[in-house]
Image (tube, rainbow, N blue to C red):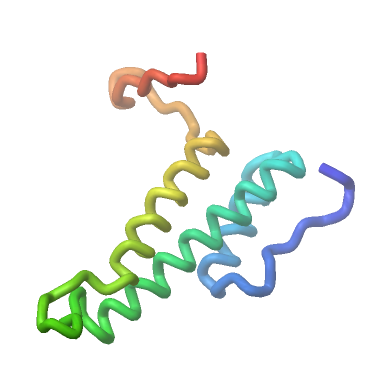
Length: 111
């Protein structure tokens, strides 16, 4: 990294900041990895915000014709979950366990 200590961004939720700090403590990350980690943390928080809105307002609403429609937060939660998973995969933070316990690796299209 660039030499200066990296702190979790202030805009992250407290639990997400703790996770961010734990990842920084447990893994040696380059600057570009810290950027990916930041985006992953933001995606996690965005998904939590969407989930809270769904809990407050429900999964659906009725449009002007009375037809039930999914709330926009449903797509936001889904997209945030997908983005988080993809960013974690890019960071490759998993630690290999015993071969008999770990499922086979997914084939990458990037080879």
